Amino acid sequence: MSRPLLSVCLITYNHVNYIRDAIEGVLMQKVNFNWELIIADDFSIDGTRELILEYKNKYPDFITLILQEKNVGAAQNWIDLITKPISKYIAYFEGDDYWTDPLKLQKQVDFLEGNPDFSLSFHNALIKWEDDSLPDKLFCPPNQKEISTIDDVIKGWFIPSASMVFRTEVIRPLPNWFKTIYNGDYALHLLAAYKGKIGYINKPMAIYRKANGSLSFSVGQNIEYINSQIINLLKLINLHTYLRFELLINERINKIEKETKMYLLKKKSKILYWIINPKKVIKKIGLKLFIIAQYQG
Image 1 (cartoon, rainbow, N blue to C red):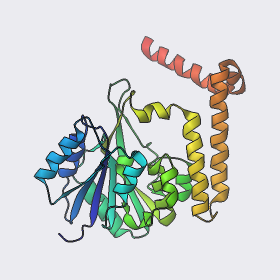
Image 2 (cartoon, helix red, strand yellow; image 1 turned 90 degrees about the horizontal axis):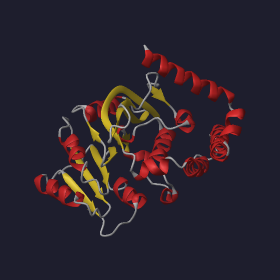
Image 3 (cartoon, rainbow, N blue to C red; image 1 turned 90 degrees about the vertical axis):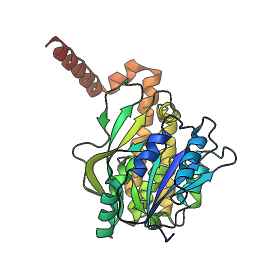
């Protein structure tokens, strides 16, 4: 088989209830270029591995498997997966998400082929709570910028992981510090933005699943830990980019540190927190009054 133009990189670990949706979302894609699917499984023990082997047998020339012989951890499994392709482009997503538009890849590849100064293409996604505890909502806001730069990425996360298609060259060679970070997706956004602009397609073409019992959700509630990891990553990016964006990075770090202090203060004393943040009290009361008015109406 000739060199693929695009490699779909799918990472999975114990996703037996979701992996079929993920793979079928890939198989339904309609493209006019040579492509492949690479799946990296971190020694799943719930039946996920059996399912991906089933698909491998059905599509032996299209699917490549990276089967870890023991649990190597999310970071190493991610690195093994993302460094495997020899293609021009990579589309990345996780095994509990899935794509919903059969033209997703074609649209994004066409965009990148026609805009060589862009390093990454992304689109909107629908957030779906597995237990229906919260209503579905769009990941990106209505005013999401069509063109973003590294300045925007430094300021915060706005790219759904299941929506990314990027140029393989933007992460080659992969920095050694990748093995030490918590969030590889955000690091990828930063590396891509350092090499080019980022284009947004204002259409939801993927489902981003959330579950109250998931590891990512439980860890995500520990703001202190998450913020410390983001600060660590920003410091690494600062060095990686030769301090070109140091002012903006330091501004973001200062903001994160302030958020952490407020978070810890709220845990310690809610009364003191509300005294220091009266606007938040007013906003919260206003929201409750609005909900009551809607209910009574």
